[in-house]
Image (cartoon, rainbow, N blue to C red; front, top):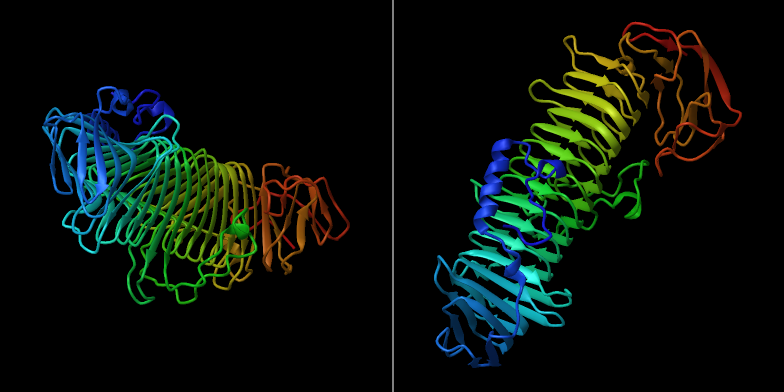
Length: 580
C-alpha cells in the first residue's frame, strides 16, 4: 500500500510505466515489498520515547528497555516512535530491532550528531526505518575522517525519509569519509528539506530510490542521486525540487564518472524541478546555459572548454535501461551528456534546457519526443540514437556537431508533428538510414563544408516529405542530399546569404538565419503544385515568432521589401525541384 495521496508509479494512464512490461512488473513488485503506508509518516508525542543528546552523554525518557545506552551510543531495540534532540560530538544512534516486524520511527527534533569513526545514524536491523524531520527544527549528521560504515546515514534495511506536516524542518548531512545517505535496500523520500555535502556519493538506494517530493540539495564528488543494484536498481521521481552538483577533480586527460541522477536499470520522472550541474573543478569555461540561463540561443553554443575530456562520463541523467520523462522542469549543465540511456529515452510534457560538453541526448536504442519543450546546446551531437521519432512539442538544438544523428543497425528518423529547430556545424539532420517527415515544422540551419542540412544514408535510403513544413539552409557543396524525393514540392534557393539576414517564402514563412549559408530548400504542404511563389531575402519581418528566440515566423504578419526571386512549385524527382 502506498502513502495516502501517492499514485501508483506503474499506472499506464499516467505514463509512468517502464517501456518494458517486464521492467514494469519488476518495479511494482520491488516497491510493493517496501510496504509503504500512510501511517509511516504519522507521529505523536503521546506514548513516544525520547532520546536526549548531551554533547558527551545520552539520557532517555519513557524508553524502559527499548533503548540501551552505552556512553555516547544509543541502541534502539524495539518498534516505536523515538524523538531525538540535542547534540553529540562523537557518538551514534543505532537501530537493532526485529528485522521481520519492527517499524522504527526516528523523529529528529533538533538533533546534531557527529561521529569520528562511524555512521552517526546507523540502521542495522528492523523491518523498516522511517526518519522524520520535525517542523521548525534544524538537524545535522556528520562523519569524521574515518567511517567504518558506508554512509553517514547508513541503513541495511528499507529506509524512508519525510518532513513533518508543515515541511519547515531541515536535515543537513556532511560526509567526509563515505557516502551521504545510503540504503542497502530501498530508499523512499516522501518529503522534507535535505542537504547533502559529500566527498563521495550523495544519496544512494541500492534496490531503488523513490522520491514523492521534498527539497533535495546535493553537492558531491561522486554521483548525486543513484540506485546501484544491477538486477533492480531503478529511480522513480514523482515531484520535488532538486539542486544537484557533481564535481570531479579529474584532469582533462583522466576519466570523470560523476553523474547527477543515475540508475543501473530504469529512471522514470513524472514531475519536479531539477537543476543539475556536473563539472570538473579545474574547468573555468564550461558551456553557458542557453540564452544566459533563460531561453534557447540559436546563435551558437560557444563557451565550451576547448580541451574537453573526450572520456568524460559526467552525465546529467543516465541509466542502464530506459529513461522516461513525462513531466518536470529541467536545467542541466553537464560535462558529459545531458540525458543518456543504454536502451530508450522518451520525453513528454516536460521542459528541459540542456547544455552539454558531449551529446545533449543520447540513447543506444530509440529517442522519442512526444511533447513538451527540449532545448539543447551541445558540443557534440544534439540528439543521437538508432531511431529518432519526433511526434510533438518543441525541440530546439544548437550543436557544434550534427544536430540529430541516427546510426547503428537499422537507423531511421521520423518527424510527424511538433516544432524542430536545428542549428548545427556538422550535418543538421543526419541518418544512416531513411528520413521521413510527415508533419510538423522543421527548420535547419547548418554550416561547415563536407556536411549538409539534411543527410540520409547511402545505398538507396531516402529523405521523404509527405506533410508538414521543412525549411533547411546550409552548405552548398553537399546540398543535393537535402532535396527530398518526388513525394513533395521542393523549392531550392541556391545563393549565398549571410547570417542575420532574413529569408522568406511569400507570407508563408520567414526565418532570420543565425549562420551564413550557400543554399536553402523549402518544402511544405502549404505549397500548391503549379502556383507561383517567391523567395524574399533581406526583407523586414514583422509578426510573432513561432517559438520564442528562434527567429522563425510561421506565418509572418508581413515581409518588407527585399530581393525577390519568383518560382513555381513543381513536383520533381529526388535532387530536383525548382532551383535558383
